[in-house]
Each structure stands twice: as structure tokens, then as C-alpha cells.
Amino acid sequence: MARRILSLALITGLALLLAGCGLFRRPERPAWRAQADKACFAQKRVTPSPYIQPASAIDGPGICGLETPLKVTALADATVAFNGAQTLDCPMTAALEDWLRDVVQPIAIARFGQPVAQIDTMGAYSCRPIDGHRSNRLSEHSFGNAVDIGAFRLADGARITIEKGWTRGDAQQKAFLREVQAGACNIFTTVLAPGSNADHYNHLHLDLAMHGQTSTGPRRICKPLPSPQLLPAPQRHDDLPDAPDIDDDIDVAQAGGANLPSRTAMTLDTALPPAPLARPQAPLTRSAALSPPALLPPLPMPPAPMPQPRPITRGYLRSDGVFVPDNASDATATLRPRR
Image (cartoon, rainbow, N blue to C red; front, side, top):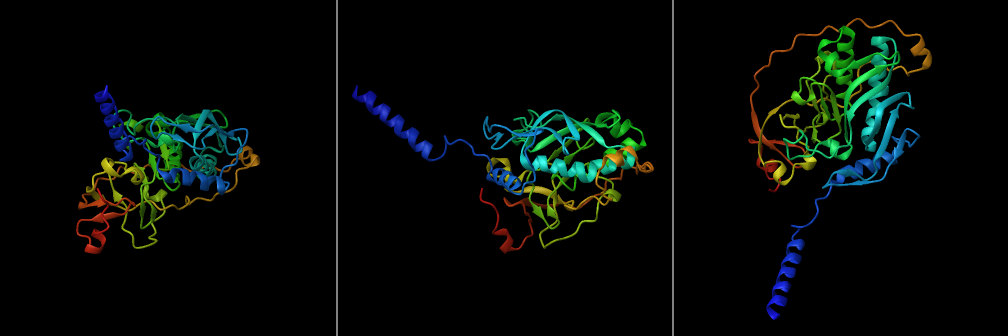
């Protein structure tokens, strides 16, 4: 009996020791997510309504979930419906409102003489890896910080799908889809369209992942890169380095420990600046929809540019999102993240 009591005491003590070391501690959701959500509500970027309803917190599995999720059935004062209720966080809901108001609707009226009345989504909140089951990193969908868009429905009922319209649509449809993608690249931090990879052949993926800061503001991943005529010229704000062109869509907020090697081979590129789309942005009114302006001519589709070889700059991404090349000064090198 004494041996059993001693064994039980040793096991209990060992368990307490391991728990104190954090081996049994539950992983925590990155703090920036809750901070961004609280700031969004504090700034009143989203107002609850019959079509944007607060929902109960989602906790897990793992670090998946949202503290203050929203059930969204429509946007733009209920003038643009979703094809089904979507669970989103506050920043993503606000960014979608901005994109609809400043990008999608002005382009739809210019191209088709009528606004978009519905967005057909292919999913928002979903606790899953970034590439289905092929990755061990969570997608932004796992935090309600992403949405997949499969089609736009115009006021007259016409449906423009990403799968068909991107490559097989008429000239106006192709122009519309490429312009709304380019505008999204100035609002969201990740925009993946057909041609970015095999998983996005039929939808636009939009999210607000944290990719770090660069000389032109937040680092943005926009694939495939829109035509230069659709994007404003980058403007340098400080002496931070240009954004690294990383094949892997790294979220620096999840890049600690085993998620990101301390050193990663990268090429340097310029991030897209957080600037509004260079297009007149008249407010959408009912009279504008009933009396459409003259349609824009079809946007000429430039041939795909030939890839140009670029020198590889090796280095690593610091935990704060700054790229540090191998030949950095000693002062900079001392800022390397701890392993």
C-alpha cells in the first residue's frame, strides 16, 4: 500500500511539474485578433442590425473560433445579400463593406449599368488547415477572418461566376472580375484568385491575415498580380525594407516556434500599398441604378508577362514581420528572433 501511495504521489508531482512547464497548457489564440476585433467595434465600423447579428462566442477546437462573432446575411444596408448566413469577425465584415461601397458597386455600374444585388459565398468561418488537409497551419477561415466568393449576382439576376467569368466570360465580365480583384488587393491583406494556385480556380479568397509591415505599409499577398494599370504606384512611407515575395503565405502572428524556420530563402518585391482604387466613387443611389451611365469599353486583356529572373536575397522574417537579409549589419542581426 505504501508503494502505491508513493507511486501515486510521484505521478501527481510529475504531472504538476509538466503542467507548470506548459506542456499541458492549452494553446492560446493570438492576442492581436481580439485586439483588432475590439478596436473595430470601438470605432463603430460595424453596427448590429437585423442582417448583422452578434452571436455566441466560438471556442475551439484548439485555437479556432471567435470571441465576438457576427452572423452576416447581407451588407450595404441590406442591399447586397449573401446566399446564406456567414460567420465573420468585425474587421472582416467592415472590410467587405468598404470593398462593396468603394470598389464592387462603382465598377458594376460602370461595366453593367446596374449594381450587384447578391454575393454567392463558398464559406467563411471553418476550423481547417490553410490548404485543406495538406498543411499543419490554420487558415484564416478558422478565425472568421476570411471569406471565399464564388459569384456575383446583378440586380437583373445575371450571375457572374469566378470559375467561368475569369477565363471564359465576355470582355465586360473579365474586366469586372479583374478590377474587383485589384481593388480588393488595396483593402485585404490576402487576395487569391484563379491562377494563384490549383485550389482557387473557382473563387476569390479574401482575408485580413497579419503578414507584417513593410516600407509601403502592411505586407499584402495578391495573386495573381493584377495588371499595373489597375494598381496605384507604391509609395514608400519609411526606411523599412520592401516586402519579401514568399511563396508560402506566412502569417507572422503564427510564425513562432515550429511554424517558421529561423531562416527562410526569399526574394524581394514591393508590397501593394493600402490606397483606394483610382476610380471616381459616386454614392450608389436608386436613381443611378434605374438610369445607368454609359458603359465602359471592355478592358483590354494584356498578354501574360514573361517571368523575369530576379536575384535571390536570402534572409529570414523576424517575428515582427521585418525581413532581415543575410548581409545585414551586426546591429540589425542582433534582432534575430529566438528559436
